[in-house]
Amino acid sequence: MRIALCGGTGDVGEGLALRWAYHTDHEVLVGSRDPDRAREKAEEYETELSSRGVDCTIQGFDNAMAADRADVVVLAVPAYHLVDTVEAIADRLDSDDVLVTPAVGMRRDDDGFHYNAPSAGSVAALAAGAAPDDVSLVGAFHNLAAGKLANLDADLDWDVLVFGDDPDAKDIVSMLTEEIEGLRALDVGGLANASEVEALTPLLINVASNNDGMHDLGVQFR
Amino acid sequence: MRIALCGGTGDVGEGLALRWAYHTDHEVLVGSRDPDRAREKAEEYETELSSRGVDCTIQGFDNAMAADRADVVVLAVPAYHLVDTVEAIADRLDSDDVLVTPAVGMRRDDDGFHYNAPSAGSVAALAAGAAPDDVSLVGAFHNLAAGKLANLDADLDWDVLVFGDDPDAKDIVSMLTEEIEGLRALDVGGLANASEVEALTPLLINVASNNDGMHDLGVQFR
Image (tube, rainbow over the protein chains, first blue to last red):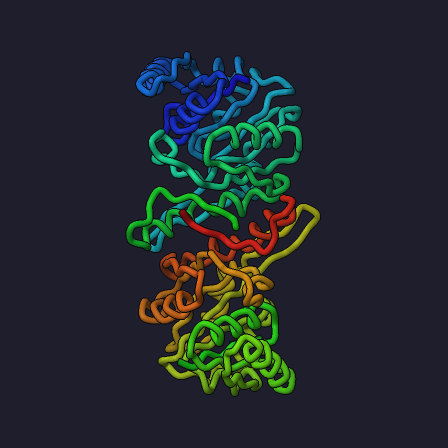
């Protein structure tokens, strides 16, 4: 399978790119608004993997070119760039492609981080509204600590919450999730259940900032 | 310490009453709108504990009498009875009492359960608004599966998220939490951070209802 990471030069994109290249045989494509930056980071990831005995080719492109070549497109961009990014790649998406959003809208005040739900109800609903009608949107990977994800020496033991209205698309994303060692995919239903998933990220940050010795947090349901 | 469980005849109240009576020496008071019902359930809890070799006295009262006698008052009532309950006990609270809310506002539709934030921002903020100004309010115990909590044969391994604006009151509630074997208290900051904690409960229900074999769920941050 070919997986494009739009915003694959950012921290969550880096972690997912490295993990898929390390744990699976899927082809990883790094996308960025700046194709030179994408190529530079793709080379950096290849070097990191090569130092661990994994020889693979990771290519860098602008986001539209990366999306054009991929079966699964992860929108690893900040929430405020999500709609732009979907619009930039929309005419490169086929009806059997799967779009994945890990984006969360947050605001920060003196007390901590808070979920900032858009009027569409969730960030995922915004992305779905901007995407072509025949492309399936899945939410996943919201609650992964990027630094630990990108550190291939770190063992993961986290749950990934997966939602969306197309069961087949969710199955693909759940499979890709569980191919990364230490991640378990949990189904949380349809797109209408997105906001509680997205609201977990500010909670994780608030837990980390109020408890000594807790950082790089994920979550397990048990 | 004396702990009153207003709504201590309900499922979360039952679990907390049994666990504190089983794992600690604190005095547990069961409150209900109906004092006969409170006494009946208190006797039932005593019998359950006695069958496990724990001899303790658990008394039942109406909510106001239970609150009057207690140092810590847990509002183990549904969200739609929270303000009523606070108003019913308000003049029995002293300034050094601690009020605890585990209440969550939810609505259900065809997709699942959703967090239903009141206009005050959170259910805890509603309770704080109804409580006397000099009484500290702490949020805790939102995300405990009641059935497993009340089953003293079940080992727990869950995190309890604790929030509030009075650090001393939070310390008391955190201590009471960790005296129950298998619970870890995590500080999530002030009352302003309540809504993300309250939103975790519908998410837990959605996870349980969409994944085979998952039930009685709690959460661990790791």
